[in-house]
Image (cartoon, rainbow, N blue to C red):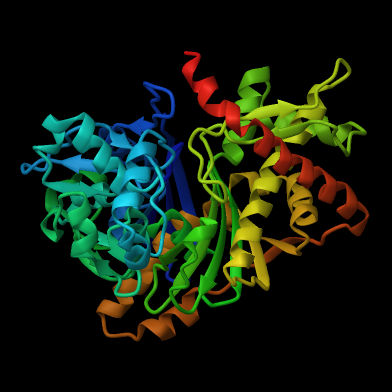
Length: 495
């Protein structure tokens, strides 16, 4: 058996697969996010570790963890986990959806235009490098003690193995990796006053980086098994869904929304805020558009109206409301693709006295779908053409939402088995392939054997009767942001 651990923003999941690659057990533990100031988003790394202990404890009640042969991790990308020379955490991790470093992004883009050429990506507040510049300017006492910068999942690998490691897919989201060479770039690190000595060693996702230490293995109920480098959550989700070849892609409806497309080379297009990163497997890259608040927008609305998400979806489905005059901008954490605006705000527009709750629910679903259409258009402008599109993530469980997304994107979408555990499944698959590669098997043959597309549970084709409505609504959605963006900074100054 093989274990995949997926460190998300809202929780940590564990997925166990057997030798055939089938899921045999899973467990999860919730996490919370701290927002001490507007645009800030942080988590305590110790909370991740406690969640890992909790998940392993749950799994040990269902199966014998001593039979696990290897493990891998996937994780939320971009987070800045800062350690001192003794390996101690210096401050809470600054997360991917933190927007505090906008001024640092503007300054670094002006002072270092070579960043675009070397990294292939714009400096955005979500990425790791601008966060370090913010710490350098605002917390100099922390920066002075900085010895290592780790991404969230890589901190857990360090706690388990004592090894400082990362993988190409996750490291590409720091702005310090050159995606063509798939290694750290000293020139990019120098911008933040760092060197490769401050960085973990970069591996391919399936490569073994170390083994679980004896004391931690005993604590977790494991043997001192191999640990592979793992992957950023989206690349891991792609491995879990068998999306490993050019022309394949997926949409992920997690806390954030992601439109992911595999490419055969590093195709950068930063002008359209397209992320061009390494895939988690050798000789593969991917392009990605990201909307920062996908399922999170629906969760926020559910909390606001004090109703569970399933109840809101059932209420909408039972109503006769199929179109809404209300427009929702899902920019609760700012937005990345295509506007790169950390100050963008969430908004409802077009409400009247007769507006019902179900209509607002529909507007939220539409707004998230429109943000994914923004991503699709940005990827298309970068030359990305997805012929096979799958849907994964917790939000993908809603058939109503899946159909709406197919209508908005104008593409056939396959909802596949295992999509709700994609990243954890991908991490487990990387562990399986890494163990077998370390025993002498060829990695390309292993990819072809173990990274097959899962069974299709449902297929959703776009309804041509809705095309005109969604085209007009999307135009309103775009115009709503353009005409209110000038107010975003003023909103931020009110409190």
